[in-house]
Image (cartoon, rainbow, N blue to C red):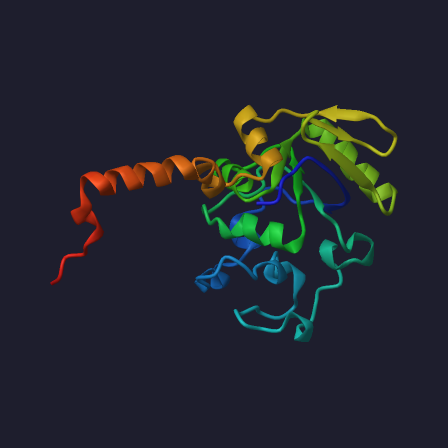
Length: 216
């Protein structure tokens, strides 16, 4: 997982409440057994005017010009500004995969659904909860200033606005440690690889029959 320390990025506004995971990545794309390739289908039913199916060439599809992520001023955005209860609905981990693979690193909202919130940290996304008044002010700033960007300093736990004003945010210390160091669950385990190998070698020396598979 890519470490997250300080990130500066263009902000895209998702001005809807209760955006659920089926809107983030529709159910038909969950058929894939791979963990990659979901970015082109992020918000599929809103981004495109035709019905999306797995295996389609995104370049051959007709995009919805009114959808925020299709507007030229928000191309390349890596910070998503959202309203309350973002990521509600089913617990599909494909939702943070799609957001991350599209290019987002930071999500800012007044609240997130619990399971989605947890899944974001496990997949290199930083979901930040701010008071609703601060989120509303950010929506106003994004609308007023094309190219509006924010700097997110995770070690200091602040969002730095273009005018250098800082907005502090809370993050659980363990989640912060994992993001800063780029550790997902597997990465956390692999910190102890030498101890694991030593344990397996010692166990095999005591119980060598474990090395042989039973013949049916």
